[in-house]
Image 1 (cartoon, rainbow, N blue to C red):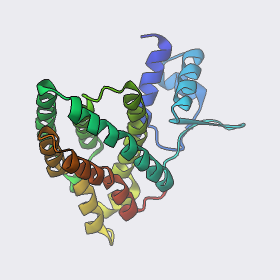
Image 2: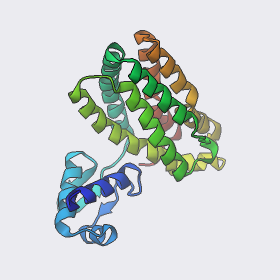
Image 3: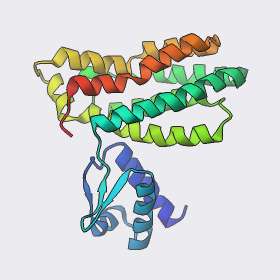
Length: 235
């Protein structure tokens, strides 16, 4: 990979997994020192990330990591429903036996990830998220539309930041430490990472039950918003 591509990949990863938190100022010199790249690759990487709406450029203030908000989450959820449900229907229509086997395999891998919402760590969440993303991509893999896959990647990246922010936000951590609405927050978070919902989606998809699969995926996509609305993290 070129230096620009390397800088882009490293910055993007740290933004998506909130190593760089929303609204963090991105000082070019500090970034170059931290990541070990020159000014040109880092500037080009930031420009590319800005085009993906992961970085914001503000007049006379330089770059910052893009914000997260309940309004953005609502909009992203709506976009995900539009794109992913269309992909799901096409995947069920065009998927073959190899596609079904991949779904079962990724579901098994996800089942091996033991995530405790009451003791959730950054490392636990990151490991779960990789497997979670793999399962959903397997479900949608048979969709033949390259354009839908492109939009899915964009929306999914933004939603990953919101999910990770919720997993590590002060509101969630406070709930696990005994805040007043502890059980509501934990229940919402447990539902979001539960295997049962993914198992039901897998069964409906491999049974080619479009109606049930659509209903289940619609409910599943709404879970992040539910966690956000219960936890009400300060953003």
